[in-house]
Image 1 (cartoon, rainbow, N blue to C red):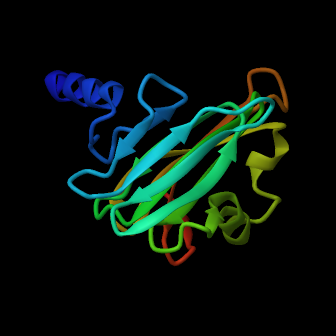
Image 2 (tube, helix red, strand yellow; image 1 turned 180 degrees about the horizontal axis):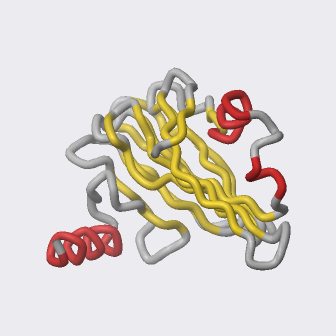
Length: 176
């Protein structure tokens, strides 16, 4: 297990293909994250002037497509079939958001928190906290993402942690 983790880490640092459960982190030493066994890759571009970092999807069969701009840091997870990406955008010191993007329609990003609110409402206890972090953890299949929600600061020694699954039809369920 330790050897597999070290090999995966070396692959990420080198900009090589990474297993789907190992995120590629940008900015970093690598400027791209190839889909495992595929022709597609996500490319990180440094900001120009006062601009923001950019993520681009490169596919051998299509022109490059800009996925999103970001300010701080992102983690990218490829789905096992390499057709979908989960991008955790660590947008601020008090928040992180998860975007889902299909390589077939890279101009359409889906915010997992929107699906979370549809499933549980804004009255869910995570919204009692000012700091909320939605983080993609792993793909359990090509159509189901496991993500974590962590929230804190409503009261001293109070923190919320929960694990959920998002399927590509837009449904969210809590994992037990």
